[in-house]
Image (cartoon, one colour):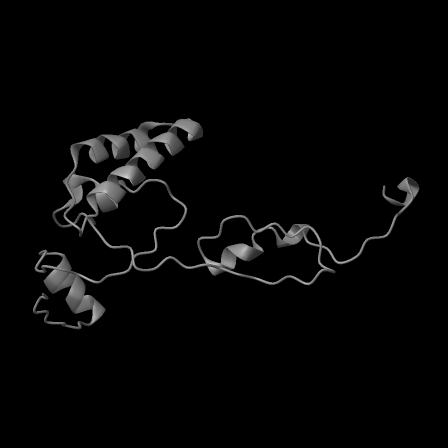
Length: 147
């Protein structure tokens, strides 16, 4: 059991103009860095299936559409996350795309450097977002010398 596959490699400009924009593909191996933004509307809402929309998976799901719209409208972060989690379940159930890569950023920090909190990173440079809070050593200073 198998499938005949013809692999074609394109220059990025040619790929965008002649393949992606007119949606001339049966399958597409393509990467996208979304970042932290919970607004995935441009990538997954069915209204974005045609050019210039970014729904290159040609995904259509009425429930997912409503969840994406709710994420955009909602200002309460707790409710936004609730809608986002429900949207992720829809994507997981429908499998409109195969997510082939999600990077792990692993950094070793010497013990002498304190107050390093990395949290969730979406790009390598984010590891330095709170570098101004890092320190190596401190000395106790009398309050009269602080002012």
